[in-house]
Image (tube, rainbow over all chains, first blue to last red; front, side, top):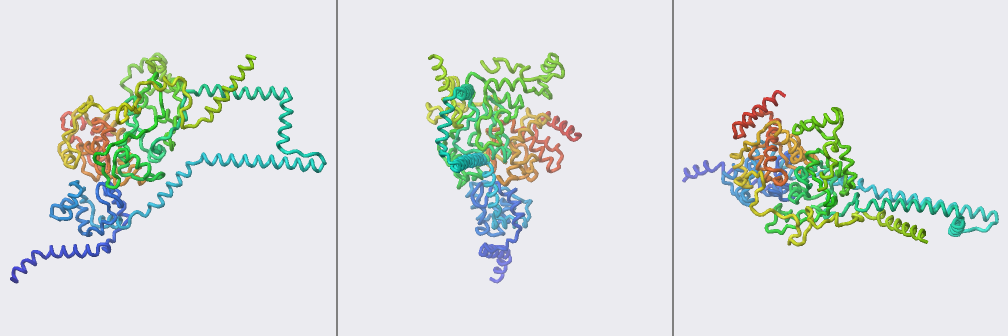
Length: 418
Length: 218
């Protein structure tokens, strides 16, 4: 009896001790002596864990802000460093979580030391303290972009000052007249008198007629010339997408979203799936918060709470409003300009990376096309495919002449109209 | 009388256009001369079309359609098992060789489609990571990757990375994969020659070594 007990004890002692430790540590879960360096933990977390975990919400894996309350430190260390080994050792919790997440495997991190893991855990407790100031800088950027409003205010103030001066001068005039004993008159009476005199004077009348005619003729000319030309057209889009934020501040390449521009006639409007490449993770924007990004989720059927697509969801198209429109009679091919011509998007579309809301920058008239074809130089260097043709062009126009799009047939009618 | 009327007409036209065009708002396209020319009956790309139930004029190709130049990639599942299988078995086709042209194209494509997260050096320090927009981008040096896994991940995504299959064609994915492994080799300081073993075709291997020699000299 004693023997067997002893045997049992020796065999089971490490296990017993372990479970005792586990019980103890889970008892004092919140007060666990996690004395890691949270700042270092944040760094490790950002590079290794954040691809699948967030503190406050479920991503690919569970939210981690209260993980130290849910699990014991020792279990966490073993799980983080090599979860597969832990599962194979028959740990019930480890197998349960593995099955809860449909058998998706968490990467093992054998390169992390125990103190690294402690740092991470310290970070999960402490959380992000820098979140608030980051938001403030976001707000500052928005305020800086609203400069249009300031100008109108300035003009109104200037106008007010001028009006005040007119009234002041009229008062001064009336006071002077009162002193001299002459009859006074109000501003309205003065204006009326001057207008009557001017209308009776044939010279003034002729001058006024000429000025008005010139202004009207000029307006008529520009008005008629602008018919059918839509530059500065800036329609309201269904989602307040900011090119300034995405292409400007975040420096995402135009081709990342408009991937069709390299290959085809159209520069495609990115599908919502492309938005989701980033917005699966980024659920909140700096300006409109969750509201605008939620519109993408509504279109594709993404459940942001649980980070997964809703099954059987009827997806809806996002109805973007087209800005640039060439009539059917003109042919334009994006890839020809972007890939072959190596023209930067901004040459036609303007400073897109500064536009909060996109407007049409170029007039897209034939004159505008032709002008660019006359001026733009063809890049003949390191384009071996056309060496023979480039040699011929050099013979024809002289070795030093700059070869423009015009010289390679860029002005021929049939290039664009057929 | 006629002369007087002529000017009156001109004035009213001028005044009308003045008020309509110059005070018009940017939310409208303004006046169009012969709108038929601008908005023809033929469907433009992305134009809504109510004759279809979902109002999309852009239709999907018939099920089972195979585009020209398509490379089959069906035998690898999108989940973890497919990843492991791709890691063990998937090799770049012999037609795409890691020569200098492929690597240059791969580098260009990488800059467009990967750089803002993974960083131009592949160290996981892209602009989005630096600006705290996206977190958790690992350095290639810390990950056990090969041609197969890079292709699999670009095709299906992994973790918070989404699928980029719509943006880059299979051929372009292989070019990117070559560049990614080149970056990994640069980060870890390994000899780039290890890359050559990824290629199944013997000709391609020979050529890779040629490229490596050039690079080592350079």
